[in-house]
Image (tube, rainbow over all chains, first blue to last red; front, top):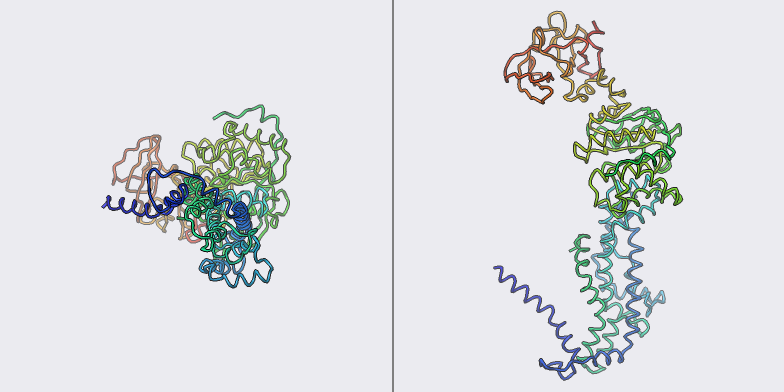
Length: 265
Length: 370
């Protein structure tokens, strides 16, 4: 029974990592070896050079970095006070409002593609980085997560800060936010990886090099009209996912720990 | 742990206490009344203990003084100033919480000066007060540690430090010793009292532990179901409990309350033929006798020993009197009485208290009534 479990785990692991292994293999070898395995195939970085020169990846990196930073900062700034209000302030209709916020979790962003596009075009934000970010700045998930964390902060800590003369905002900033740090990290990781990899919405809303994030840039780069060269495509793919991949490998332990601490599995 | 440094102590100005006065303060949560028109006066610089079983309203009372909760009615005065509608920070109170409420993300030093920073106290002044508090409490070596790295007793000291540096005239404490072990609790009791005397601050101290109340207080306020049962000095509350509840709460073990019935020549313990424990005052009367006031003597109340507990210096006898009233007697030394043996328990008439069984009110001692 135990052996079966281990075998299953290995099988799933290999299935999961196979495309990545294939990408690494192809990217580091000449095109001739893309579908042809030979232990003595010569290693090369040529594919990376070619991919880097074939499309404005530097610009795409910049766009993606701007995008995820903008989204992350805005989400923290907007979710924190909302979560605090839902967690600790008493006002009429609080629970109803919170239920409405939670409803947003049930709406797939893709459903709103057309509606969002319509609104953003009216705002004149089509093909801007702000335009890509705007639909995601208020996050029900972030509000929910932070609210749950804020609710676990002992009331006595809040009382102590109140006695010491802290205003509402000072209490939020000096007591609640520092104590919710693991949640901020976990949520930040989720948010960054989601928006780094997000594809459909940026594809719809952008149409120029100066705004396209990596995912869209990569798709344009590997479209059929360009002719398909797997070596270069995999090299570009590795290149674009490398920062996230590296970050995950480096922060693996903290990543998992902060999720455990924040209570998300 | 390092001992307090006397030189640092002398060099500092002491904050003086302020009187605290509550006038018919009430607190209702919907239909539930947590505090019912409580009036209370604590003189400046004195140590007042709010005592009572859990759920009696003592913590609510303290939180109303702190301003963490609003009274439904009545006023709170601190130092002669009506603070009923002031926010907690402007009332001149410091507070030590049951859980200590130390900020886990700050080290000891940052915890202690947290409030001074929030109030914008200048840096040299912060340093002076920090040094003063850490000298008094002997926590100089712990300043860079996080609360999670401290023992319960050390956390308690840090919480005290935070209250000391505030230099507030009034200090509120909510069961500050309940999370410590018995030995440390006894030590901290002495230290708290010495600290309060040295600083001259007014202390409002909530506890359910009567040992703490008896040992520390200038004034004990016994609360029960949201009202004050008795407000008196520890000696007074022990010697002349105002109600049957106060009698049954104070003392280890607490006072025996024996139901009486009319007999020959006066009231006798229910189900016995004598002796007379009270004159014919009121047929619904309870006789109260402290276990330590009882002795074995001929002509006493007939009783059957149920259980005998030898404690070293004395023995606590649990007896059954008349129709099943349970009476405890604390006898010096090793009394060595077998279960089921018949004894007679007697007390001086001045040690017998009388309470109205219906209202619980005190009726005056036998000596006065006779």
